[in-house]
Image 1 (cartoon, helix red, strand yellow):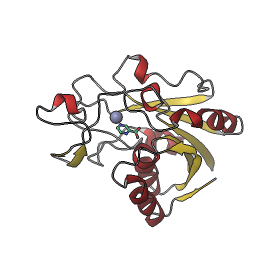
Image 2 (cartoon, protein in one colour):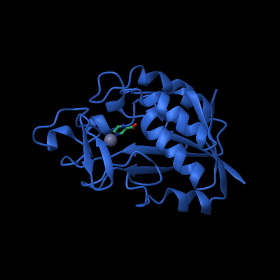
Image 3 (cartoon, helix red, strand yellow):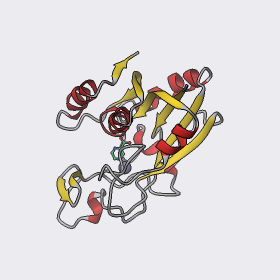
Image 4 (tube, helix red, strand yellow):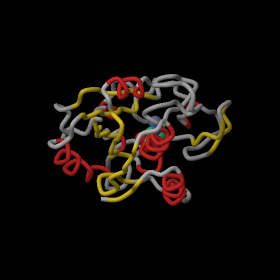
Length: 199
Ligand code: VGL
Ligand code: ZN
């Protein structure tokens, strides 16, 4: 019965100065580093998009960043281009301790589909493989931290709860984008699926 510590998308583009900066995003780094020392199993995720990714506004003629379009799998926010594979923006924040990570999950690699969750792409059926890894390692519970609380952290936590894990979100080690009320909505959804949110 193992416990996993998941660190979601603590990458340069989600920190101040980055392409899709989350306010105060860098502030999570020292808390996450401190918490890793006591963690049983550390997993890091990395948003890792090809340049032509369809979640980028620049790849949709006539669209602007933060517009919402309809994709075959449902509504999709169009983002400024971010976390492009192999760029500095996609690197982990330089102060993030990555030495204890057993696994780095890269997601959002399919051009036609975004992936907020560490478990499934945004169609909610295409898996990343993380569930198989955690199951094989005997994980039954997890704590999530990182960026952004209302997108990738929340989607990951919801999927984990649906998959049957006991899930806690350490909100002090998360920061949110908060686009048009997205943070309040995410917190309601988390509560509805039994995820605990707190220190
Ligand atoms: C994220 C928007 C687009 C996140 C990733 O990490 O929360 N948000 N891609
Ligand atoms: Zn992304």
